[in-house]
Length: 219
Ligand code: DX5
Ligand code: ZN
Image (cartoon, rainbow, N blue to C red; front, top):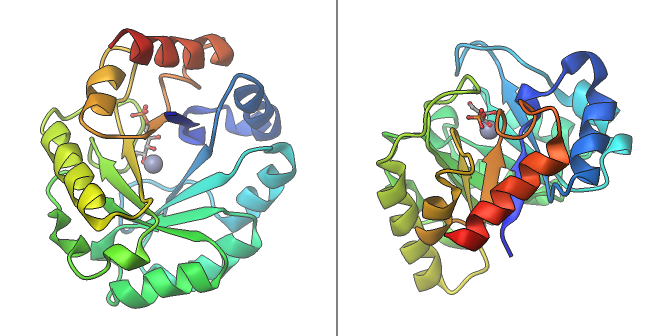
């Protein structure tokens, strides 16, 4: 089963509760929550307060993607605010192993995020501490960017590492995912697709999610 995680980044921020309910009713498996700090990435979005406000409207797990530096200080805040998964960029943490443990100790699943130029070698010594690998197929900071094709090789390499580990680690892809490339992304080994503009950029979210799933069935 492939999980679809609509990214709230492309939702209407003036009515986030309705937006979340709309996407969940339309078949979202997770709610992707992009946290940007105008420091690690050149954009500023939302924090734990908004996560907490959205939580009662969200019948699926909240998948928090931290694009912040430093990381550790904000982790317990998001756990308290109702996050189920918390992922961070290894470059943004001075002590990756410690941050992974902190996330798990807070009761959440822990994810590592790989920018287009970030090597998967960061996984070498922490495979047993990771619940999710997030491969970025754009440079983080903005929705609506074009998918970077070299991500496909990286997804294959991440899938190889996961299979070799024998562990149930999710492989998520984020950036420029749509109905025309989702099939290739899943064929490369992804099991979880983030879609911002391809879902919240469309008027009918249920139809947008259906189109994504149908594209997978055809691929
Ligand atoms: C980008 C974010 C993505 C973004 C994806 O930094 O991490 O989650 O919302 O948006 P689309 O699907 O429009 O590329
Ligand atoms: Zn994201």
